[in-house]
Length: 493
Image (cartoon, rainbow, N blue to C red; front, side, top):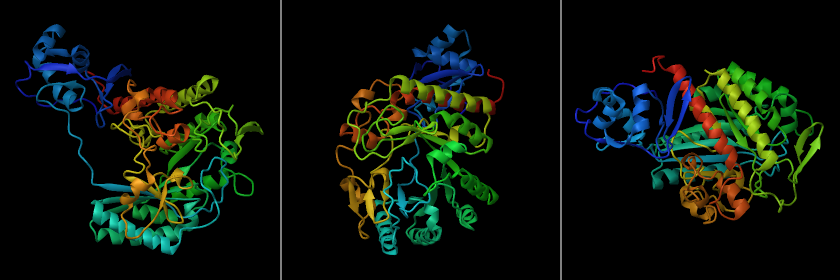
């Protein structure tokens, strides 16, 4: 948020002012900006006085700092309240703004079917064509009611997934409307999202989603031939043409999907072109680095077993066993290639600014979070769970077919099952010992705990993508600050 004028207390002159530790500072369009990774939405443009004050704030009083800067005390005092509220400086009597807690919530992935019309080689779902039954649906509704009653949950968010969830649109529609009515009687709200490949949009589905506030996320891994190779149709052929038709159907109904981009060695070089395409289509998007949940290794390294060259692209071959000799970190030439490509992506985003929808409100990179501090990279097993088509509960949707699941019981609150699906080796401390000295630890928290657990047997180490995260976060902060600058008055004084 840009700094603005707030009436300061009249007794600030003799209070000590000290800059907080761990701030990230930069310059964009000739304007200084600062980010506090421990604050909430604590990214701000600085006026000249605020920048000078922040640079010099070493514990001297405001009066002493004003004398050193040869500025009136009143001019500097005007900057202090917002600097303090964002946690950029520490001033006795001006505490940072408290973080308002939201209502107790539950985020639940619901895999409505294992069937899919695509055959993506990196998919972690074991597809057998089965679907979530009516009996399982009733048990899930009962468990949600028990959760609301026993755990005080007042907001439930469902993520309908698969397989391809829109193959069961009628089920989704009925389950959502019925469950929302049931939860409303208990004083709880229900929201939802559909995570789809975008190639099958049943008649009326997009309009229903718009009318009921159900958001849509579409998996897109490349433009044209790259998408066809990464997300081939079941039985052969590509999916790009069908995806474009699906997006047009959403647009005709007034629905703007969010794009989920999974990045691996096969499509990495095509991500800049996809970035341009998404910007032109005015779609928000998230980059997610592909995860090897069998071996715990970094699949962005094309040297690892499981990749083979095919028709000019690298195609992923499913592996029967994990690669025991896989390096624990993305490094060397493979790392350099990843940094080069994402550097180009963020260059293109920066050149395109301003963009719609808002970059700082919609863009994500993996589980990185700069808008508020995190102690874990995700809420898996705490306020986020997943349920499979056959009623198994897991801490994470990617672990539904692996270790750590429990059976759904209609009379048992879902959060009560969390201890059964979160063994001690999967629980993540904040932060791990290897991350203590990292300036970005409050925005990263070590990365995906499931990936770390698969690699190391615990979730306390560095992500295989640590160096990518350290490269990407400053780029994201710079572009977010640029968006602030483009929205702010031009006078930086």
